[in-house]
Image (tube, rainbow, N blue to C red; front, side, top):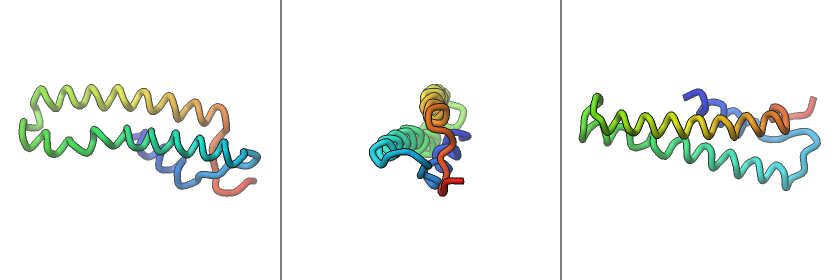
Length: 92
């Protein structure tokens, strides 16, 4: 869940002082991919629960997949922040 908020914040405040448009477009593309992969499995949680129940092995498996994807997404976000700094609306 932390990753979702981090991705949303980065997308909403997406411009960086001294970065080229091509770099920003690339970062934007990465962030969109991270957001989409973050949400894809979360969007099916309710339907899995309604079919199998909240304490089912299917939900346990889905949670493992979500946690793994969160780790991968977090690595990508951290790499962007370490390389480009925190992306903000306006330069200081």
